[in-house]
Length: 180
Length: 101
Image 1 (spheres, rainbow over the protein chains, first blue to last red):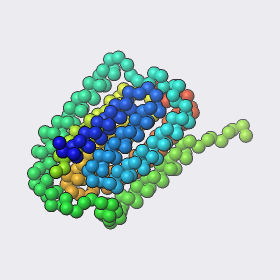
Image 2: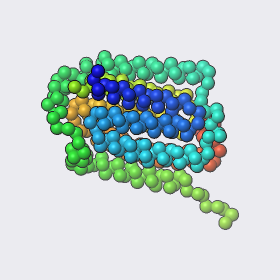
Image 3: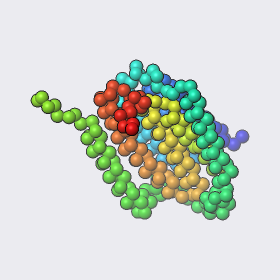
Image 4: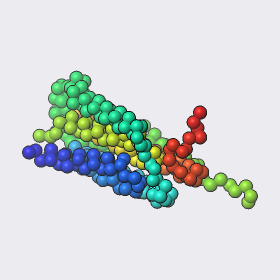
């Protein structure tokens, strides 16, 4: 058996199990920890795809910074005791799951059957890609693109982060006490 | 011999669907947020898979931008959750329905 396939199955299964755990645990802390498991196994899949920079950023930014923020808010608000009735029940839940399964079938159909009818999935695109595959997509190439062709989006990203920063300060700012 | 593109796209579609189901069935705002992160990550996986398939670095670049936007979105979203909790003492999205017509 192809060793790459074995690694893919392991990481893929762990990420799907982690994702299902995220939506089935009652306590938000367990959901957050399952989400970290999913993020780590996705980082493994990124390594398998040769995207080492993205894998490192995934672990540092997602599994590190963003999930710490989630855990921090869960602990700050002490949500474990409040979330006992945290899910839909009965008929609505069944409808949601059926709609979700339909969406999954559509997605799998597009990935498996409809892809080779498109320009991206055609044999010509695969041949053109095979010619480019000799030069691996490393951090050097990403950085070169980021600071030449994609310089404007990169700068806009910094504006988005600044807007988020100001927005958070405005949102959680304490109102002035009128009686003082 | 590397794996075909379809494997990664199917996995990405499944992860995205799990995120959608989570948003539909959970009523806890924080878990809904986590499911949105799950969907963004599924899209990232598809981006990287296409990037390798086509031999172009742009896909990984877009993952970088998606992560930056997701970080901003999480910061704002969690701030909204904290301020909603301060006012209403709950983050159950069914109980926070003042805007309902």
